[in-house]
Length: 377
Image 1: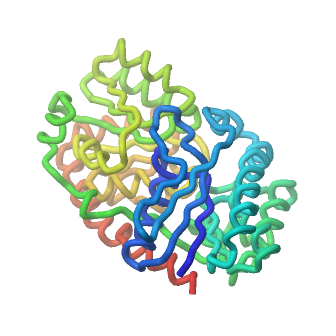
Image 2 (image 1 turned 120 degrees about the vertical axis):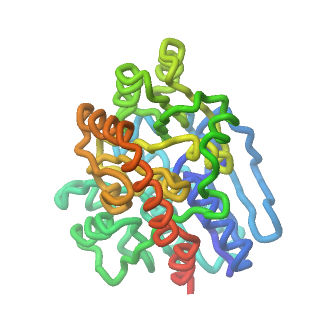
């Protein structure tokens, strides 16, 4: 099939939705042999080399467009309407320009996130293509709010809405979208790449001391619980802490590594390199202070046999259970207590790690890609 993917999140930028988009487009182009065009923005991070028009292979083309970025998206994220207006404007402009020239070559428009969904809605109105929207976040909607009305208006006319979690699905039904319109999807990882390897060897490759290690992967912004990680590193020097990502607090984290010998910062890591970082760790921390979406880092960590300790917030509660990690009410003391428990109990650590690997094979395999592709028909 000929599919246009519209997204503000794509590689080489780091993030769960970015990597998911890479996996989805690779599956469609390489396994199903669909013709896929990705319409996205240039990377938010200034550190990445990028190609404006990238012909990945004969079935996959990525078009990266200029838009206002840097750390602006992180700064305005707490203002949903402002964030929507900023990103949706660019997405819609570029989508309509593309469709005005290439509409005959497009059978399916698949938009990712509310911002891209608005662009897809405009394209559907003008060009009458089958349209699918995937939501990658919880919007925490009050039924009476302007945001809830906006979300309903944007999504009501698309052919299929794919929600990333049960909680997201229920949220959309609650604001008045029909249940029959809303399907589900789940992230997956390439389990030939994300697998268990030798922990000592992974630490050696990364030049880390061979001792108990906790890992955080994600954006360095306050609501991700970055302050918790730093405080844990200060108070528990016998544990290594790996921080992988970037964002508003990147300079702050960098400064802390200068005074904390057990805190390690890694920036701009390609997703294909991530397995050695997970395999160097004994536990993955997801101390989010908000209603977190379905963080892909959890799928990756579990596939490498690493237990996940996450906040009892949002979709984290659907991604893990007490057999493969811990769901924690997100206070600093709660995370400290849970971390010390797994550090001090090797048998618990080993049991959770073994369960994590088995659980990931059942829940986060490439079979999940087929659940998305069936909606293209």
